[in-house]
Length: 369
Ligand SMILES: Cc1cc2nc3c(=O)[nH]c(=O)nc-3n(C[C@H](O)[C@H](O)[C@H](O)COP(=O)(O)O)c2cc1C
Image (cartoon, rainbow, N blue to C red):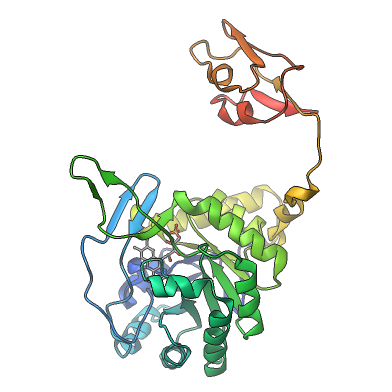
């Protein structure tokens, strides 16, 4: 039921383990495959490896910041690693990163020879300002994609950044240059937090933010691409549950990629997500996961298409908790009052903003026309 065809590759499920140090060599890629992933992406491979700075990863319960650049294994070493990665079967996508089209084409054709099933171009690293700039230049992305697509015979995915003014334009450039698909999004440039006593950010340079922090931006990037460009999409950003993965599929992604959840919880999170997606599909009488792709897009309007509807809040469940009055305290229209455990909404003051329905911990308020 979860089987899906992505860029001509037959995946047993649409859950891919994203590029990152959890996939830094053949053994770790094989572990990700063994955890049940439909495919895996290598950490980004470059022609000149660099020594790592440290510390380079910090996290909290909502996500992470990292300043890890890319694979520390030389391109030649990937012949060996690719063999190890693929020794139990499994689909391996090689991620590559470079500044010039010819260097990318060189890396891609080497990795195709080493057995990669597809190539992902990582041209949107928020730590490297030069590459961050590339990510928003459709013409540069076009040249890079074209050079690689002409050099290989396997599918080519280009990983896009949210740090761009027009992601549709970049996705269109990928399609026109012969790219087979796009993945979105890479980490978002940011600073996780500051130690007040030391007056010091936890990591001492700007880094890539990932995890829960970026999921809303990633969902919006995927939906925007799906609504404007006819190209297969792999959705990435803050996915740690089947629910999150299904949200991306409903907004137009064909597959999803998981990074930070694997890093912070371990690879068993992959099998849990696959199991829960399967259960959801069965409970909804769906025969193929592809059937839900893009289903939520028809309910995603542009702001111009929105029209006034006279919603009002209504109390759907009584009694309410006596010691909670969040709806009363936060209603900006003074429409909600509470006596004991009974909430009352004044329908003439309520303007149907919807905040109380989200904020109520007991979900006792809803909107009606
Ligand atoms: C520690 C770390 C290292 C990463 N390394 C790479 C990389 O080598 N290449 C790449 O394209 N993306 C890399 N990423 C980005 C992830 O693949 C992914 O796009 C991003 O983290 C958002 O997804 P997530 O919230 O599920 O982590 C890295 C992310 C993290 C947290």
